[in-house]
Amino acid sequence: MKQLTPVATPPSYIDIFEGIRDKKNILARTALAVAEAAIRSRFSDYETRLAANTLQGMPDSALGGIRTELRSCYGPNVGMKALKKAIKEAQPKGRLIWCPFCGATTPGSHDHYLPAEKFPEFAAHALNLVPSCTRCNSTKDDDWLHAGARQYLHFYRDTIPVVPYLTVAITSDPVARAIAANFAVQQAGMSDASWALLETHFRKLKLIELYDSYSNDLLNSVLRSARSYINAGGPSAASFLANEAQDDANLYGDYGWRAVLLRGMSVHPHLNQWIAWL
Ligand SMILES: [Zn+2]
Image (tube, rainbow, N blue to C red; front, side, top):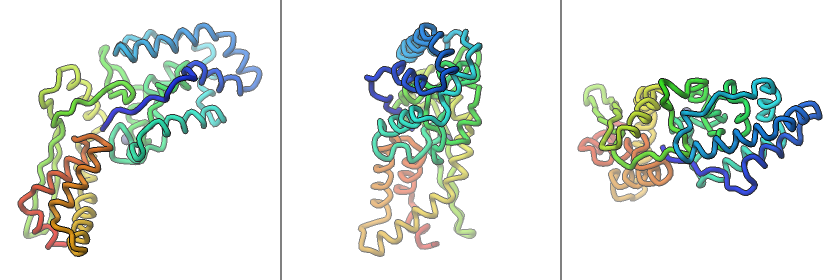
């Protein structure tokens, strides 16, 4: 779970939006052009608030009258296609193999961090479009704010402290030859504000349950790879897993769930026994 890189400017985010707008049909284009000053002001407000971490205080939209035209800018058009490509290309290679929100599935959609239903003017703002899997996108939906506090990490804004916030306990049953991983999330010395945001992000997206469930397949496939590595003359399963953990950590953070699991396996006293069970 790591911060994403925002699309580089210039062109400014409002210029990107207006490029999309200018490809719309004459009716939509005209309606949007009439509101140009108001949209520009809102874009500026979004960018200022994101930088200052005051996005949670964003006033309601006053542009509901052109909601349809604003939201249509997110539709299948050349400009939006180019923006989505730019978002992808701004990231280090491999970062978007997994959804930034969960780190567990393929990001096949874009979440509108400020929901497009309530904030239609940000439907095509580059900083409001966060690559996401459909599960995270539909779970988050309009639920971004509660009692004045943001509920989910904003991956262009929030840094995840490099502290061991995610832990795993790996247990095995020699009779059933079964291995299970149980994850937990903890404050681990991060500030109360960082923890509050991370905790709601994990709880609302049910990430611990997701990791516990997905780790079954990962455990087995990684143990098979480790066995192949040893059979091909590799020094040890532990070194194989430690290297795999480091590769994953480089892309998704030291405490992404895969890195935590692979590292936990690499130092586990029963590792070689598990491989013998395969
Ligand atoms: Zn996801």
